[in-house]
Image 1: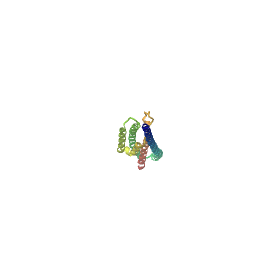
Image 2 (image 1 turned 180 degrees about the vertical axis):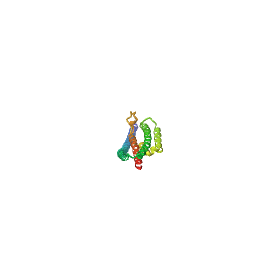
Image 3 (image 1 turned 90 degrees about the vertical axis):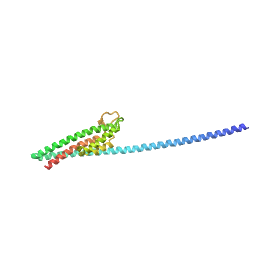
Length: 222
């Protein structure tokens, strides 16, 4: 009789332990599932936030490009107007030899300035192309890009021609917002960057515009 009671009590203990184990296992599983769902929700929120920030950055970069394009077109039109005005002035004062001499002297001076400006822009184009190539590279060191950026900003602040073109602000804009790269197999540096090429064209137009404005001023002051 005692053996039967022991077996029955033992069976109850075993069932009790089994039930407790099942409850602990179920609680652990519920806790694990809750943490999993919380992690998924957090990841989804992070992805949504990153997507929103990316869209904002893309919109802002697009607006910069569009504004620069519009400004470039205005400069082209202004250049055409100045060319027409210069032609008219030259026609009206062609007979005046002193004016012609003054004009030729000023033209030589401004063409020398223009040549120096064009050489400067070519050097900046090479440096910016190399900087963008490093930016787009997966292996080239970031410190080299930062060194190029620093040197360009110093040059833009100390070189008289660069200062006259106000290049420092444009360089800062390029370094912050030009993130465009060609495809992963691209070896042509000219296919990297977009904003930098717009600025280089913009600076070329500024050089032309300043040359004509200085010539016009010299002629009208005679």
